[in-house]
Length: 372
Ligand SMILES: Nc1ncnc2c1ncn2[C@@H]1O[C@H](COP(=O)(O)OP(=O)(O)OP(=O)(O)O)[C@@H](O)[C@H]1O
Image 1 (cartoon, rainbow, N blue to C red):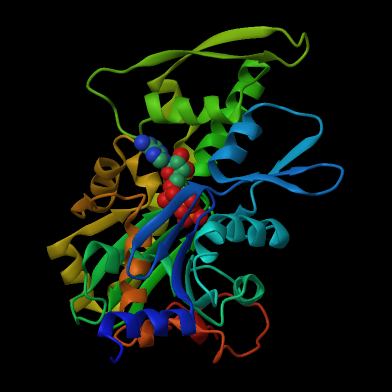
Image 2 (tube, helix red, strand yellow; image 1 turned 45 degrees about the vertical axis):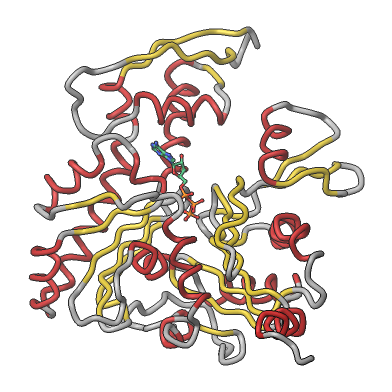
């Protein structure tokens, strides 16, 4: 009796290994397995033993350790501003997240597709390729995050109509006008949700001589941060530690004061959006498309209260927050992975990656390989 189609495909899968997509983010790393969907969504954090470097935990478990100071354990966030800041820890994070799955397959990972921010330099791209090969991927592909986000929304990146996507994560904000499979106008800045938290931490340090935890800064942002006046302004009591006495203290913070505290990064993001739109002056038909169809907001950072309204007021563009902004890049990476042939021209591969020096990228390029 011959092999059934299913057995044959199983055999082929074993022969070549699994295909994995990764949204490697500053705050969160998501793993997509071809044919299965998103199988992991955990914070990008690794905890290791200080003396031996032995990995104790990754993801959710490492975050719990991070919040409880322990002299013998250190925690690392391997990604900063969307790119690899600690190579070893990044490898450990990805290995840890896919480790359990991989054991179920005989020949490990075949293809690995990773999303990267628009502003990733040549050196940083090299590090991503190296890490993926180090982990065992036989073929490695990269895609720019806003293109993955667009595909995750359901936009056809090859259509002539211009589509504008603003992806605000933790470490980076990417703004791209996508048309005909390329980026017609784009900006990338290393300012996003994480910078808002940094401003909150700094405010308490400078204004209240008070240390607050990373978790407290995140909670403040989620509960009372807004970039547009609220119908009813809100406030909360914040707990921390006085820098001099070391004693626990509290302070009140209201949404009006906080709006001012976070205004600089918000203005930087708005300026970058305006710059991207202004660059379309030489491509008026794309500018009209954006005016007609509006802008998509993706990434967790867009959930900041009133941000959509602020962007509309400042740019006169209609904006829409996509469904599942924290998952949309991973969904896009997944769609590409399921159909690599269709998306061939918008991804780059380590096979055809040429060695170049680190320079500012040219966003007219269609994929991360085309950096000048
Ligand atoms: N409700 C919310 N309000 C404001 N910010 C939020 C909210 N929910 C999540 N965020 C922020 O979204 C960010 C995480 O988003 P996301 O997972 O898309 O980023 P990332 O992919 O890890 O980062 P990057 O793409 O920059 O490397 C964090 O800064 C988080 O604080």
